[in-house]
Length: 159
Picture 1 (cartoon, rainbow, N blue to C red):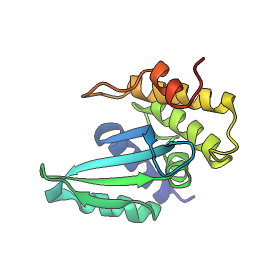
Picture 2 (cartoon, one colour):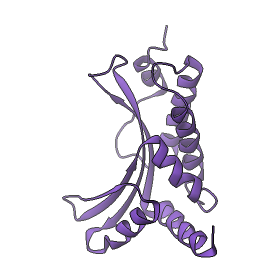
Picture 3 (spheres, rainbow, N blue to C red):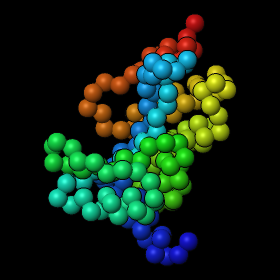
Picture 4 (cartoon, rainbow, N blue to C red):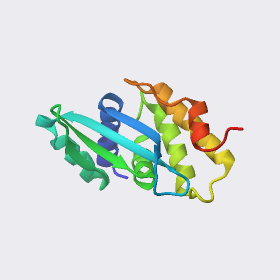
């Protein structure tokens, strides 16, 4: 990796630290036998008047999509365990303020990339719940999120 790439990744890591978010969510899914799925997301936010930066970041990694919100903001969303892990591997050496969330999300993606919901173990599910809580607790939250007990119940891991 050349020095230009390192500079670009350092810039994007700083952008993520300031105007980004890292999420690991447990989403309801009615069309699946398990009735849930995990979703990993890295998101960058920018005033829509300056969204060229978001396209540059998308092109740098080759993943994600840019969309405009109704509030005058645009966002670059990168979803999927493989894509999120690809981005985090390149940014982790440079992330400063969201390092706890980034490490937790990278760890979750590593687990989820190696298994399926059919074959995932109870130990792995409990680890993922712990990682969701780490990320939630570090993030600025505007509305209440699920507790550990609620997440375990969704996953069928409570007595």
